[in-house]
Length: 285
Image (cartoon, rainbow, N blue to C red; front, side, top):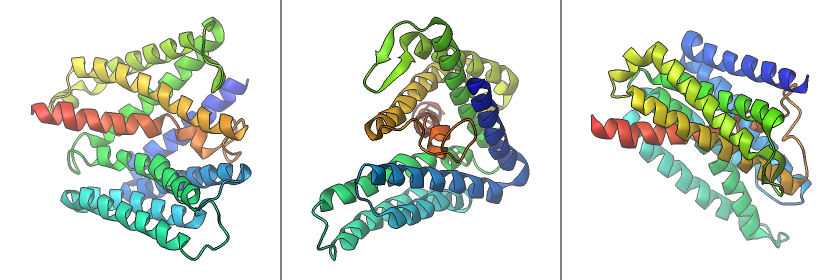
C-alpha cells in the first residue's frame, strides 16, 4: 500500500512537470522546477537546523533561485552566455557568504556555516539546472524536451525497479550504515528497469534522436549509466537523512515525503545525461 501510494504520487507530480514542459511552455516549466528546487533546498537547510548546524538559509534560497532561473532564461535566449552567467553567479555567491559571515561575532562555526550553505546550493539548484540545459541543448525546436522526458522516465523506472526487486528478491545488503533496506539485488533490478525503459523509449523516439547522433547503442549505454547513477543519487540523500536520523526530508508530498525525496536520483542523472550528450554525442558530430 505504501509503495503504490508513493508511486502514484511520484507519477502524478512528474506528469504535471512534463505536461508543463510539453504543453504549457517554458514559463510554466521554469516555475515548477523552481518551486520543487526551492522546497527541496529549504528542506535541506531545515535538516541542518535539526542537527544544530548553521547555514544562511535565505541567502541559499535566493542564490538557488537566481542560478536556476538564469539557466532557464539563458538556455532559451542566450545559450552562449549560460556558462559565463553560472560562473559569475557562483562567484558572487561564494564572495557573498564570506561577506555575510564577517559581521557574525557570535558564530564560532563560521567555516562550517559557509560550507553548508554552499553545499546546499551546489547539491540542489545547481544540479537541478541541468534539466533546462538538456532542454535547450539542441535549440528551441530540437529533441531536448524528449531527452528531459527520457531522463525522468529512466530515473523513475530505476527507483521502481530497485524497490520491487529489492522487496521480493533482496538478500545482500548494500550499506547498512547508510540505508539498511537497500540491497544489491534491488540495485541490479533498478539498473535493469532503466535499461528496459531506455531501450523502449528509443524504439518510440529513435528517429528524432538519431538525427543528433543518439543511436540504439547510446540508448543501451545511457540506460545502464543513468540506472547506476540514480542508485548513487538515492544513496547520497539517504546518507544525509541517516546522519540527521530522519526517514523523509519533509512531509509536503503525500506518500513520498519531501521534495528532496522526489528529486534525489534526478539530481545525479540529469548532469550525467547532459555530460553524455555533450562529451560523447556532440563530440562525435
